[in-house]
Image 1 (spheres, rainbow, N blue to C red):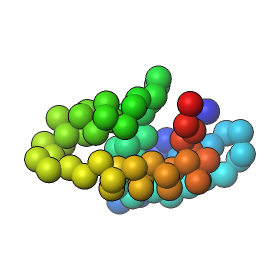
Image 2 (tube, helix red, strand yellow):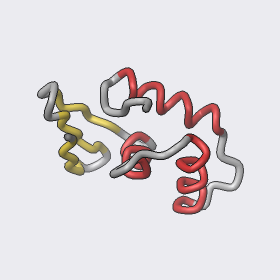
Image 3 (cartoon, rainbow, N blue to C red):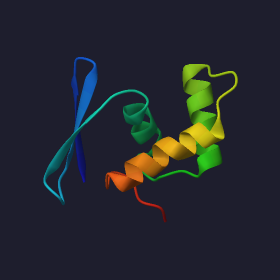
Length: 79
């Protein structure tokens, strides 16, 4: 459903169903990577991001805000 290609500091994400290409910067590509292929709960995504990137005091509200942006862009859906 998504084609992803790194472009210097951006990551191009092509959403096949809509035909729209999005240019993303950190942390959006990293969040998308954590959610693929099967999705994750907010807590599971937070834990994976904390482990993968060594985040000591990650903010769940900040992650929720980024997820809301990805939902609004049509790149993530809530099950």
